[in-house]
Image (cartoon, rainbow, N blue to C red; front, side, top):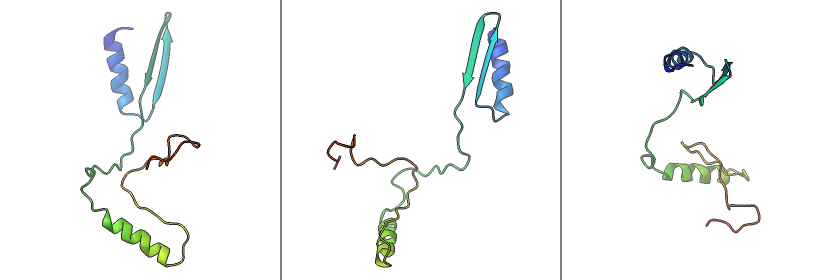
Length: 91
């Protein structure tokens, strides 16, 4: 497969929601894979929002009798207290 053909494929795929394409032709294999990004990404730099309102919000919820504390964060991810279930906590 020539470089121009690959470029054309990439241009065609750019306008679609296809995330993976695999082509096999004349003994050659080509696999194109791309990640899907969320369109509603908040590009606010870290540290630009004060952390105090979230703490006050969490305290208010615990005062109302709720046993769980809700923490609002602009970052989506997974929180780990320790590197492994049996390991000591990070902090």
